Image 1 (tube, rainbow, N blue to C red):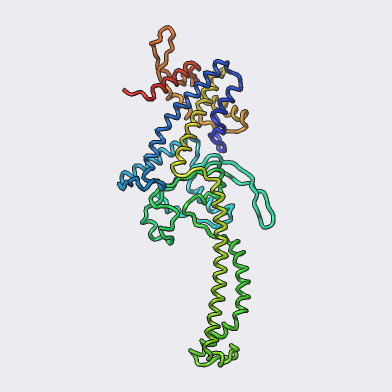
Image 2 (spheres, rainbow, N blue to C red):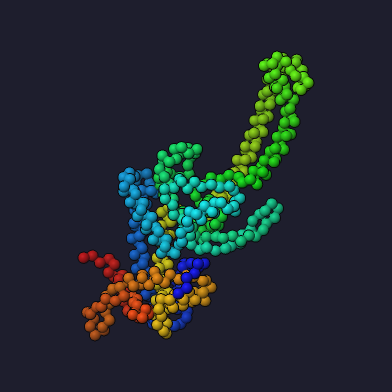
Length: 442
């Protein structure tokens, strides 16, 4: 059983497509094909029921921290209970993410992403000290080509992309943000609450933009492009207002020193004594300088708004769900992955002409996936075998005695570590028994 560093366990096809691939090999008779489809259908129903409890627990523990909750829902202020709810939420969410074949991203990776230049060419900063808790998971580490505009021409560039990114953030309480420069009423988030985001096809260079507390500013190139025209405009402005400026300087010398250095400042004393022209000159200078400053500030804000608009539009089309909506998506993905893994193991053991151990089975499934869909995966064999061994119940193996029932497992391992599964008829009976008894009350 090979271990790969550059492969993922995610099975990149739907459950229905996987079943169709199995049936397309024609290794099962028509009767067996019908039984196999029935087995897969009941298995999916069972796993849907099984994962529903995860969803209910997660939704319950998230209620107190949901920024979108209705104001009519009372807030629990017991710190001990809130701590337990946070721990349970994080524990269940991690379990679901792992079952859905997502992988954790460390804070170190995120910090390196912030240090690299983004596709938006902005200087960014995320204050990780604002977070009480943070989880970041991804699925699908791929490369893609995009077109970037550089001045007057476009060029293609290979970039690393995460097909799915899940981010959970629990912000610290209000007192942490009391001394922050941004007033609390202007924050893009509520202190003490938990925010969860799900994005698709997100560049590794742009991970920082999904954080609600990201601070953006122009990089040195944009500052230079913005500053050079401003300097040029200011030079022409200074030339234009120089006479008025000299007059005001002359007034300063006249008032405080009693004389004007005419060798340095070419201003006549009569011009200083006339109050009205002096006031007009001063007002004109203030209006000119104020207009120039306002124009430069407006230009800067327009450029900043343009950047934010581009980021907002890009992330809008990549955002798949927020907060409670993320849970439903992940639960569905987790039950889908576990069903597909069981279907693959069961089908290959059922149709194999020789006995297989776990290593041989793992290699066979990985090769089969590569041949069928052209994708190399690192199949999660150990967890799948554990899941299958836990599927157990009573079925009738004696046709002569319909009342006799025997406790069986869907999969078992013999003393030589070879794997064996129940026949299609027995497996269908077993999963049907489990489903029928899922709602049994004593």
